[in-house]
Image (cartoon, rainbow, N blue to C red; front, side, top):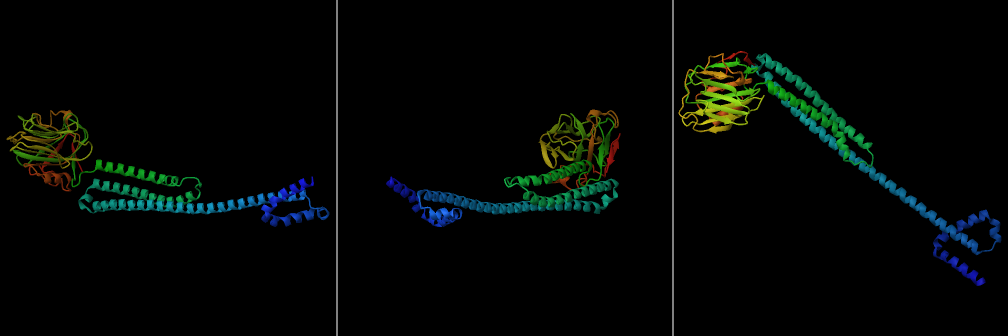
Length: 424
């Protein structure tokens, strides 16, 4: 029995040897506690296996508490590192958003200054032109342009203010942004109001440009003939001072047609015996040139643009029968052997907006073929203009001032009838 007790005590004391370093640290602490609680018993009680057993368990509990303390210290250190990293990341996001908003603000300011300089330059050129100042209606147009310019200025100033507010709002929004929210969401939410404002401004500018295009005249043209509606009595008669005996010709005009049916006459020249000597008319979206009779036709398909100014030219030469139709300074249709060796007779009737059909001037016209819209820069030459000259008529600033030697716009008498009138 004594041997068993001795063996038991040896086995229990073996772990104390392995954990000797922990025993050195905590033995005195354990003895002090036992001395305070049971001072008398420790002095009288002999050393036994039970006391040795309690000491070992206390050491184990102390080891567990110590490891838990180390774990808490490590977790606190990790939390501190994460906080520092998150603060650094937040600062970088703020800086990138601020830089992005600053870039947008600079782009908006640049576009604003460019638009303002262009509009102001246009207004300055218009106001300094003495011919424009003498006309009452262009002056009213300038007033409207000035008002629109002021509205655009206000709008663009508002955009600049939004750009500045975006920079401040971006920083504030990033500061209150949740840490787990992706940074890519921030720029979209900031720029949505700016994008909406830019789209609205662009729409207003496009509407204004469309209204001005409908209301204004081509560059260099001071007046136009207005045909307000299709009517059997609305047309304009042309009275050229030179003879119309022609072996070749070029006819150019700026046309703004409201509607084109199966046949809508732009101009025609004919005699009582031959009413279709020269004729230019629209057929839906095509242009048709007739020379020396209705059987001689040249068609340029899909070349009509409704309700906008379009420069048109048509040429013909009797020598080789070549004919062509030009739109916007570009050849759209060409033909050879068309009315070759034919001569356009003199003493016919030249009309704009209707055709000569064998009856007297001012009566017997067909309403369905009448022209409705505006025409300006109507000129006739007795030669075939070169390609460069036709392009000048279509795009030059003096397209209405390059007068034909047979009919010169603003020089030759062109008399409106039945409701047709001049507009400025």
